[in-house]
Length: 200
Image (cartoon, rainbow, N blue to C red; front, side):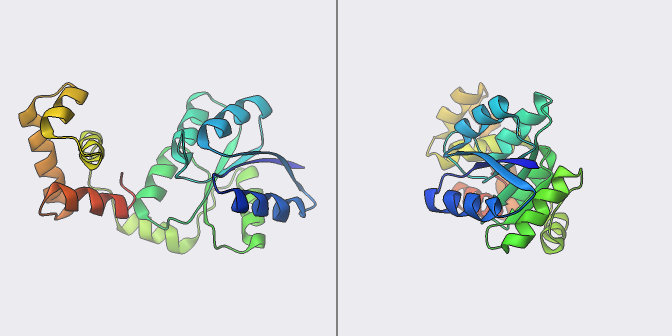
């Protein structure tokens, strides 16, 4: 049996996924978590073969959980199930050690197949998503991404500088570089573009 833990913050979907997958003869749902923090805690306690998780959740994101699982050298493989067909999300997920990436509108047999594939040591990414990711590279570096996230929260350059222990001029330079890379006319357009493509 493939022991699966589900981390999903939408209660209806969480229940539907558990019910559907429990019908598979070789898959056992050993638990469900309502947010990312609970998902990480339950992964450490239950040691599932596969963690099936959303990306955007309260607490930890699916990508942050995957990074933590990799850093802690846990044997659990991570399968992202999300509504976001964005190249940035997929790229960041793969960099974090995610083994599979499936959209929520996928058929139940595809989802079960993805679970079996990642459990067997394979990587599962639908071809159209993989092509999108490789043809749309993420232009931002880590600092530019941090600055844009804080700008998105409404922080001024001075506040961002204090938060990241940088000078105001350095923050201004990071924002200008990010806007240039994204073809944006201002910081709002820059973080909206980056968010839409999954790069934040």
